[in-house]
Amino acid sequence: MSKILKVQHLSKTYRSGEHDLNVLNNVSFEVGKGESFAIVGPSGSGKTTLLGLCAGLDTTDEGEIWLCGQNLFELDEDGRARLRNQNVGFVFQDFQLLPTLTALENVIVPLELRGVKKAADQGKELLAKVGLQDRIGHYPSQLSGGEQQRVALARAFANKPAILFADEPTGNLDDETGTKIEDLLFELNKEQGTALVIVTHDLELAKKTDKSIRLRSGKIEETVG
Image 1: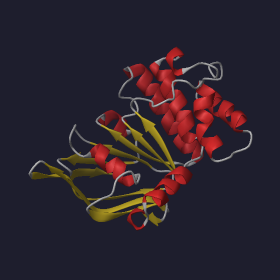
Image 2 (image 1 turned 60 degrees about the horizontal axis):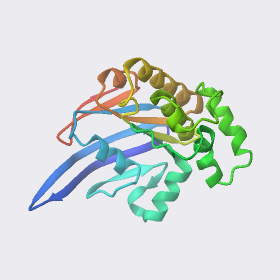
Image 3 (image 1 turned 90 degrees about the horizontal axis):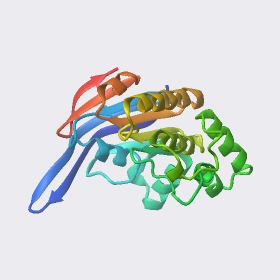
């Protein structure tokens, strides 16, 4: 299985006043094509920092990350941005939809930025897949939290990413709605063959993935799978 994400001996330290804060310490793991992978741990364990580094949103102090065959730290900021635009999807806890755009317009933004023809048709198809074919003209304020996250999922998969990073994707949802979003996430992951990396504190969600690591104080405490 080809590796979409490969992390080797990753460490990250932030300067806090007169002290160094070691957020990640010698973290290594791999995620293959189509695999689902969870990064688990309590608040402050380094989960979100690790996700940001893996997506090339930040740079590391030590170690290396290969994303879709590219060494992230051999690329400048523009190079990392191009790599993300071409290969990466994101889903966040707070949805991050544009409030002045309809559900359909939110979904087709990444398609239009890439100059995709018939972007609206693709957007409608994606919204139908997440069960929102009747809500395409609604604005985020007219949608429930679960519906907004479905729009965010459709948008994340619009560019058929090689890898999707999901940061606490059900954190703002009730249990029943969260379970439906999880099911959708895994369904789209399998259907499109997208590697899926989920940051979560939810151990039950982590059990649904192919592999997982548990972080504590920036170190891998346990590896499953």
